[in-house]
Length: 121
Image (cartoon, rainbow, N blue to C red; front, side):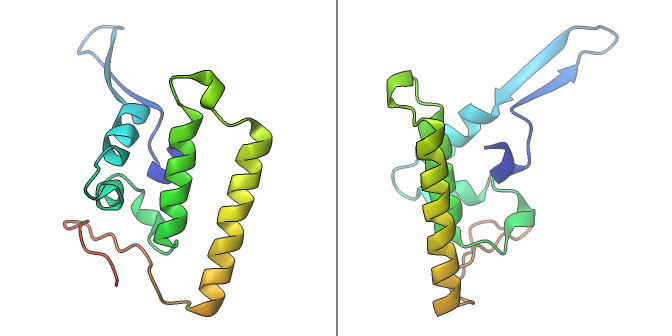
């Protein structure tokens, strides 16, 4: 999730004049909320994806987000082990390379500073 968003797992701001920290929404909550949109999870995901990832294939980013969601499942028995994580990441990479070879300009995520809802067809 940190790789996809460029954000730390938990944002903390020091309270004014104290050593106490005020915890803000965790990255897991942010990503689960974005992926929980049944109507268009990819659209919601574009709002939290690191803008430096605009040249990555949107399906690959989405699959990585789904994998990250699986890794934080509340039921630890449903979480993939590291071997399965590596296999899924390898598959995502292979599909990305194959897709780019067929059509290098197709289906990239477009993130604009003020309008993250636009995507290339």
